Length: 114
Image (cartoon, rainbow, N blue to C red; front, side, top):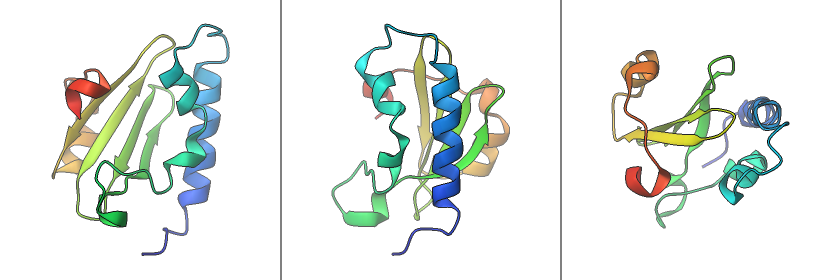
C-alpha cells in the first residue's frame, strides 16, 4: 500500500512540534528522544501483519500538544505531549469522535494503553 501523499509533510510538522516541545528538556527519557525521530513513524506497526497495522499521522493540534495517528483499518491512537510527559489514548474505531473530544480522553503510559 503506498503512503498518502501528505505523509512526509505531516511527519515534518510533527518533527517540528516535538522538537519545540522538548527543546528545553535536556533530561528527556529515551521514549521522548525516539519521538524526536518521527520519520520512523512511517511503517511503524503495532502488529506484525504488514501495513494493515501501520499507524500514519492524521491530525495535529500543536498548540495543545495532541497528535493523532490512524491505521488503514480505522484503529487509532492519540498522543498527548507535554514538556515532561508523553501519554496515549487508543481505540479500534471512532477516530473522528475521539479526535474531537481529545481533551476529555483518558491518557496513560504506552505499556498500559498498548
